[in-house]
Image 1 (spheres, helix red, strand yellow):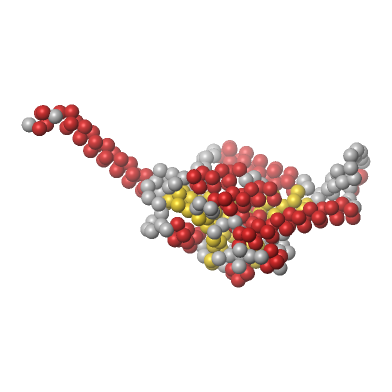
Image 2 (tube, one colour):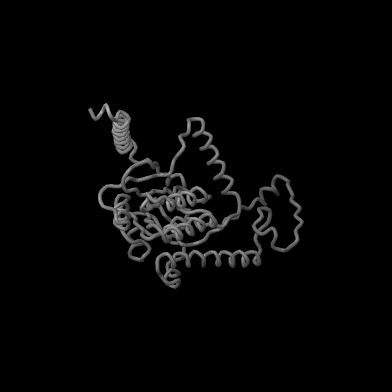
Length: 305
């Protein structure tokens, strides 16, 4: 009788119940089949991989900002597997991590290697977790100069350089470094080294003098780094997740949210590989100043998620 008097109300109730059922089903599907999706329900922790040589900062800093603004992301883990790289991008990422920790906890999980620039970035976080055998440290600066002078002489090629100042062509491959050149470059390296030491000291609550005692470019195992105060906890990635949960006040299971990765076809992967190889070759030939440990080849540090 009530149904006949209020047919519209009955229809709305049926539609509402159907909508609730569909939403519940969708939530279950997303939770079961898409555990790392940004559409997941429940508590979430963002994970940002930092793999290989650090030559650009835009993707990582942008992802940090995205996770920082996302109210559903309760904490952030940086999974670092890098020997370091260029000074500018490393410092940009460090700065963004320091800004991020003002509003969200950031935990670093070190993989096989987190050295030089990789460690610089790690020092900015709230907490650092490393494996006992992780290669880390290497607090130092390095510059490379390639000399072509003798080769050019052998093949009969001469270069004429016109310059406005004595040091305008410092590091050029056509001539040796003079003593005055080396003094100038060493002063530059010293200043960039000081920035590294101050960054580590600030991030790790150490004095600059304490950092300087171990800032001679040497590498440490994760276990040694912990004894020196460069690392907080010895453990693996899952230990870092548990630490991030505790720091963020999360109880129970969490969903790990990774940056969206575009799927590449076979041809795209081949072109990407060729481009990376060419880039590494060109970079090895140009003069650059870096926070990098050159102990192993970059391709060994790549992790997949």
